[in-house]
Image (tube, rainbow over all chains, first blue to last red; front, side):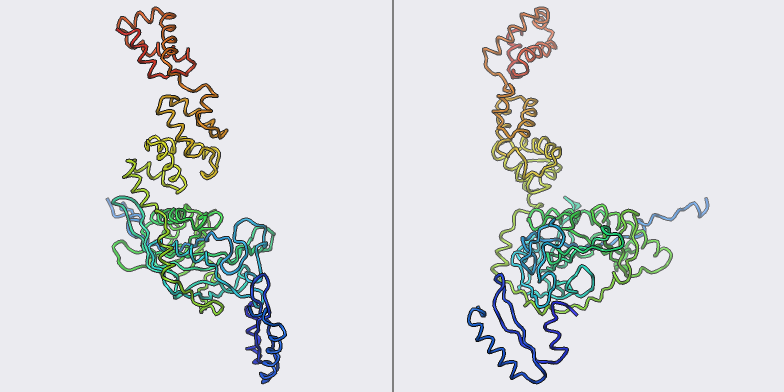
Length: 62
Length: 488
């Protein structure tokens, strides 16, 4: 397994819902945050991601 | 006479070598291919690294625009067609100096296709096809001889942008291969895309080589020869591998398709371990990078920025300056030397003198000081001034060499050096006449014999005047004066 792919591959291997959302920039480069939840809880995942997006505000998305 | 007296013809008479080359060239960018790390050579180990080139979790590549520009520039210089769309691919293999476990390369849709490179001159000019030029990233460096029993890894090089230039199997000898490499290196120097230094690894060569009976039109089974680190290493490795293959064919055996490693110290090739030779790279499109889409305007603009290439420059030097082929070869060896010569010729006017001084004194001074011409103390305009002084008779040719070496040492202009060293030729008629008269008066016997027709004494008398002037008299004028005053 490739170390740099580890955040994408684990969700697939475990079959759990995962989502990546923009959470800001470091040294001008975009950084994403990942949320993972239990099987079949997509609704909870989306709610959490949306809450995170609102909490971080516009700056995280530029 | 028996059949035994007939030794078999040497292998070169019975078999023909067929060679294609894969050349990796480091592009001279400030930063790496897919991250902002410093890409320059020579930093302490593992200093120029970041999450992207260390393949830390979540890191994503972003393509370096300058690397694309330099790769396109090289492709154009080799006469390739640059594809408006090319695709990066992952080439998978496991090795400690490859942090990601794959190299980002290009596979079935490379940057550029279908070029050519001409080798040799005049009637012996041959064309070697360029199959493709593609972009990729370098791996880190494994250092096996630093810690006993262990391998050290330096990842400064991991992610440095490379191009791979693949030739057609169009070369027929090891000399062809070296000629191709020399021509390629010179072009890359002219277009200024790489340091092209084989010792530092900014130019690396793998060779595909096969042998076939002379006259055959199909290709024999090839092997790949790696691990050469000089042009002469390439030449010797090709010869060694060719001899090995010919011996197999002579015994009726088959050449096995495999990778051979050149061992320069032992002057031999040996098969790479099968792991090293594994070609199952499981290529697939790099999901972290979109296809590389180049606007036609940019492709054309990069082609339009190409400087004059070596072959064109050689032709122009021969035509415009009337220089011999050998001199043209020396002067165009590097673009910096060619520029220097042209600047001297333009400022001074006499191209022949500019050529002779550039090839003679300038190259000798550069070699002695082991400096690149870019750091040379005597600017072209300063040398041109010195040549003006020689042409106008203010400094003799032999004194000029002394002036030049002092200019190299001090960086002072020619006229000041000549003045300071008393090397300015005296052309003042009164002063010259006085010296001539004194010499004739001091040597009445010689003067008398010269007047009587013993012309060979002219040299002696001129020499005495030169001595009296401490070398500063203009010998041409002295010759004239002695003949006038003492001649019949």
